Image (cartoon, rainbow, N blue to C red; front, side):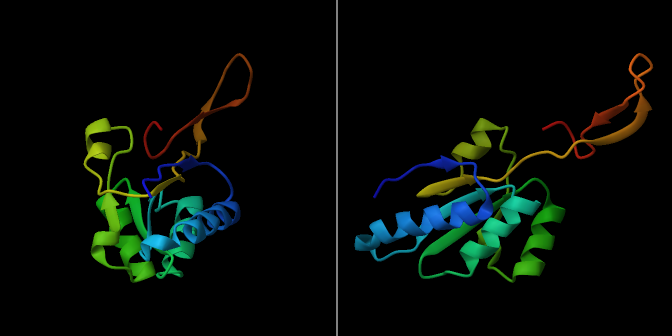
Length: 134
């Protein structure tokens, strides 16, 4: 089936949802191709690992922001190199060049952290994004 979807749920709910979809797509006898953005982060990595555990049902492709994240994910999961791609999800051209897939899990996000600066008017810490603007 030509199935495109985006979900933003907890990793447990994502796996349950994808499993239900995979069961309904059994007539193809192929593992569902699932792109997971943010595969180097906490939620994306959890989803990516769960999908890797079910090779008969899923063929995941993890998207990460840097070559360092790619190397770390390949090392910790032992997955084939073609299963992890460096891709800037804010670049439409880069996203259009992704391999064909059946489902998309958006696990990318940004964690703000204190910058060390305090807002003089409020007395509160100023937060920023240490790994770049989301």
